[in-house]
Image 1 (cartoon, rainbow, N blue to C red):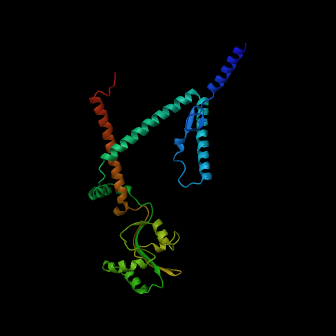
Image 2: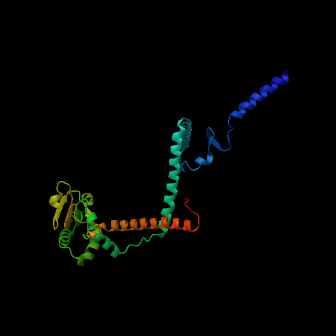
Image 3: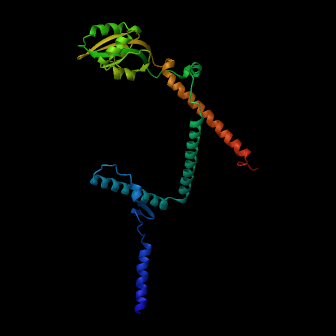
Length: 282
């Protein structure tokens, strides 16, 4: 009788230990059959973090890990088989799309010619001008912002409004004394840049101030702005070639990439047929 009782107790103890998952070495948490290991959080805490903050970071990570595992397990139990089949099909297709896209992008990156000559840019621009209208006003201008007390104030003002390329050395010398400046009036800029550089110009007064040939002298506290508007292009007009040039390059490169992808897809099919790796059965 005693032997039978001891044997029954032994079975009960073994059964309890059997059904309770054993902690795996180096594991720090468990959800069902999923374990989180010390190696999973090895680089989680930045160097120099205090002990208290480190504990908070690790605890938050563990809780989020556990929450995700519990939710997915609950979802797998409660979502219908039909929905699971739909989601699994989406996952399978997503993997195909992701791998294919990454592989093709790598092939294109290593193959496509990224050099676009000036002649090609101009040819594409001339053939597609109607597609490159301005979204807003574009301006070419020059300006300087300097102190009223600058000892060469009068000379700087005169040379600015009677600007010549011969004065390059003068501007190279005195430009460091300006609070801000832009002397290259061959570059097109949009109104957003004008507003940020010249705070006294705003949407309410821009039609008055932003005019071709306009000369502006504007005092603000102890500073003075000198501005000369060279050229203005209004909204929905043809974008200048130099302004649209970076966009033209991107358009041409994207077109090359698409052509290369089509060629690659065609060749990979042809090679598979040739090597008898691809067959269509009647």
